[in-house]
Length: 209
Image 1 (cartoon, rainbow, N blue to C red):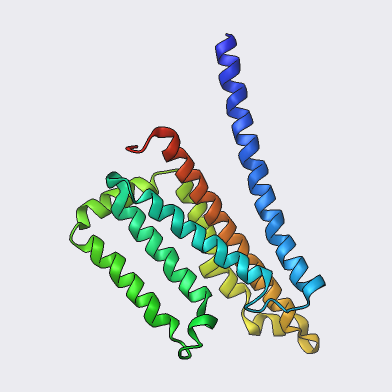
Image 2: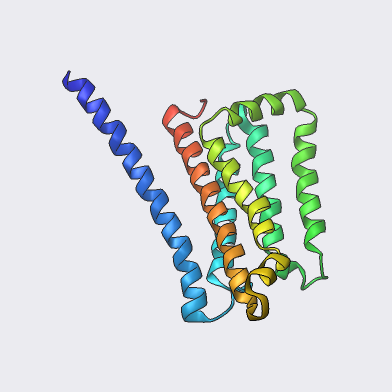
């Protein structure tokens, strides 16, 4: 009976800690936007805390999945996922690649995509099996939610036509950018939390899990 109580209590404590961590990450995302708009007055530009936070999160996600790629039983899937987020990171840092040529980021993203795809193409069946295993993990649902925020909702919600219709003659580009980048940052937070969830579960189960 005592053992059962200990197991139940530890279960709730673990989930409470995870919930508090998610709450903290979400609050930090809002704090970055608040500091950009209210203190720094930089209008959510490339050097803003919001944009830098997005890039740091993406770089961390890439690093964590590459670290997971050390394990042969999930190497192909982890490499593909890391490559996907690397392409997103390159897109977020387009301002840096624009120093070479406007729109140059697309070529770097294509090279990254070609490398990770080429690595897995000769192991297609293995890669598909590993990806299927990843998608069965509970963390995948959170990652999918984050990607929907970043790739779909933030783009549609940030349409200029929509915000011109809402604010009419009082249209303010900073408001639109704040909302769009805020949703995008929250999506990245979800992807980061999903990554932590997945990595921690695999570390707990052992390197071959």
